[in-house]
Amino acid sequence: ESLKRRALVAQLGKNAATVFEEGAADGSEQRRQDVDAIHHIRKLHCAGDDAAGVHAGGGNSHVKFLGNMVLNLWDCGGQEAYMESYFESQRDHIFRNVAVLIFVFDVESQNVKDMQYFGLCVEALKANSENPKVFCLLHKMDLVPEEDRDKVFQMQSDKIREIAGSLSNMCFATSIWDETLYRAWSRIVYSLIPNVEALERQLTVFCEACGADEVVLFEKATFLVISHATKTSFRDSHRFEKISNIIKQFKLSCTRSQSQFSCMQVSNSRFTAFVDFFTPTTYIMVVSSHPAVLPAATQINIQNARGYFEAHINDSSSS
Image (cartoon, rainbow, N blue to C red; front, side):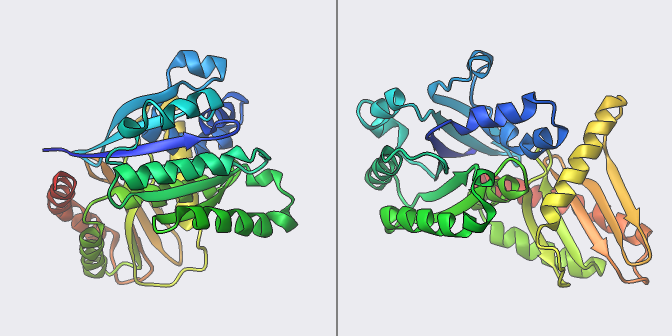
């Protein structure tokens, strides 16, 4: 039977879904690419709400992810009229069996109710769900002066951790202008994947067998990082986000020319990188700097590993 997880999004201030839509509407290609992943995972509000810029209270959707895994998402608008119903008439329904709570704070908001509502969410989770994870996005950090960002983030994070108490929680400073949203959503998706440690062990074996420096597994539609194995240190800690954006830009170019992206090979004097279709729900990237590792051998290894990893991913998402 398909694994069914429930994720709940509670949004405050100017809701995140509206912000994401604005990123796509102003003609900025970069902003649109930055939030592709969020649109795929969330799919949470109808065209009428998009046009009006208003969030329906408590929208529900099901998203198939990684083969047999089904995410059951509740998207809860942050307007006060909706928030009241979440904690009164709908509390036992919305907060039951939650795997992940994603709470989006507008960092510019001065509304004291923001933390109060978050506290009510925490209480409802503790009463209705077993071991849920809490992720808080402190959004629109680009509007905070750069010299004050660390201080603002630390102050807000401390308040959140105090309220969350014993619940597993993690905070992210996010903006639509950089890679922070991608990193946050990758971490959230990672937390939902069953038996991810086993998948990482198998990727490590594959990385060693290929003589590769690094192997990265991406979700097919969003190009969020699912897992990776790294045998060499890299200076750029944001390389996954940058690579994902490059691939998404290239896929967009392919679509415009009525072509279908399948794979990519990049080579120079220092390394060779393959990005290739792997399983029905994933792409794989293999990076090698050793001159003795032939590109043809890497391609054969990718081909031979497909069946094993497809079965492994399907078994994990069904467990």
